[in-house]
Length: 343
Image (tube, rainbow, N blue to C red; front, side, top):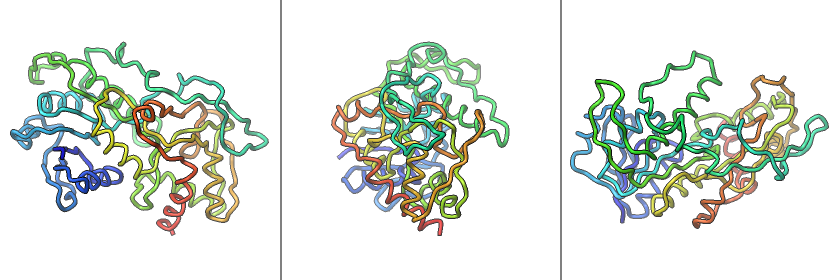
C-alpha cells in the first residue's frame, strides 16, 4: 500500500486515477480548492496550490510515497510545489502534455501517414518525436527561471492560449528538473538550494473517450459536423498525431506512480491517425459520409488537423514495461460514446 496524494484529480482521467488507486488499496488523498468532493474512501485536503503558506498549513506534517500533480501549469506553481514537497515525497509525477514539443522542430522521416488519401491531400511522412527532442537543460529553460506570471493572451486568441499553455508546461517541467534558485523578486521567500527530488513528467497525447466526461468537446466537434453533413475544415497537408484513451491514461499514471524511473515519458496509444483517418472512423460509426474543406495556409482548421508533424514515440514507456493499446481498437467505441452524449 502506498500513501499517494493527487493534486487535482476531480474530473476526467484524474478522477478515474483516484478511483483506481483507491480500489488497489492505496491510502489516497486529493488536494483541491474544495470545488468537488473526492470519491468515498478517499481523503481530502483543501488548499489553493498557489498559496504556499496555505498549502503548507493544509499538509501539516504529512508526507507521501508519491505525489501525482494533475494541475501544474506554470513555473510559479512548480516552484511552490518544489519548495513545499521537498522532503515530503519519494516520487513526484507531473501530468504534462505533448504540447511541450514544438512542432516546428519535429523531424520528417519514413513513417507513412495512416489516413485515407484525398486527391488534393498527399501522403506525408512522419517520424514520432522522442522525449530527448526537448532539451530542458539549455537556455531558455536552464536557471534562472522567470517565476513571474506571463501576460494572459487576449480574449479569443486561441493560438496565443495554446502557446502560453505549452510554454507554461515546458517551464514547469524545467523547474522540477533543476535545483531551486534564489527567488527573483523581493516578496518571494528565501529558500536554500537543494538537490532535485525524483521527478517524472508524463507527456500525454490527446486524450479521448468518456462521452460527456470528455470536457474539451474536440471529438464532439467531429461527431456533430459529420452527423449534420457539415464539412470538416482540414489542412491541405494534414499530419498524424497521437491519442490515448482516458482510461488508458489513468492506468498509465497509476503504473507510473509505482515505478522507479525518472525524467520525461511519452504516453500515447499505438498509431498516429491524421484528421482524415479520424473523420473516416467517425463517419463509419455514424453511417454517414464525411465532407472536407481545405483551409488556406495559416488559417485555423478543426481540432487535431495539423500542418506539421505532431506524433509522439511511446518507445520509452513500452521498454519500461507498459503495454499500450491501439487507437484503432478503442476509437470507434469512443465515437459511439460521444454520439450518445451529444444526441
